[in-house]
Length: 221
Ligand code: 3NM
Image (cartoon, rainbow, N blue to C red):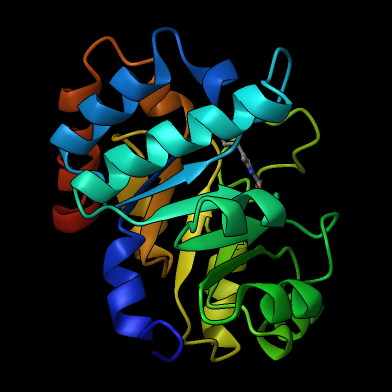
């Protein structure tokens, strides 16, 4: 099989849920199951931050979350850890600029999905040349989830990428909630990725549904 079809990937990126145990207020498996019942379209395991699991515990949770995703036909992506992604046969990996070189990662993962975080046109060009399937762009809005996040830029850089004729899948990240998700789509994104909007929601399933509505039908204001 060849690389992931770009239109199929655009559909998968619509409501892209990201988390690790440190983001969750209850069992991550339960959080993921609730989010899936609310209609998320893709999941990324990102075991980072204070109190994040290491070693065997990290791998065990990866396996649990991967099987939940696969039971529900939700693509399972691993953040940063290529060895883990290969070991659990994830559907893809997501890397930032400070992680392993994208070209090397592409060689290691074959045709699996490769997402790369980009912040300027040079990074975007390099990512495409290295074999990125989609761009992660953020932070769109202010976020406290990633301690080293850059200043929020709204939809400006997504618009810049579209003006520069990048037609590949783009997902926005950072501070996105149901009430502002439509503006991310209007800037030219194919989907939104969220951590806190779902992990800290009182009713995760309902919040995922609201997010999905905002992505598909625009703001409800
Ligand atoms: N990456 P929340 S912002 C993981 O700007 C991540 O690249 C970002 O979490 C980037 O939805 C971010 O809770 C955190 O704001 C997103």
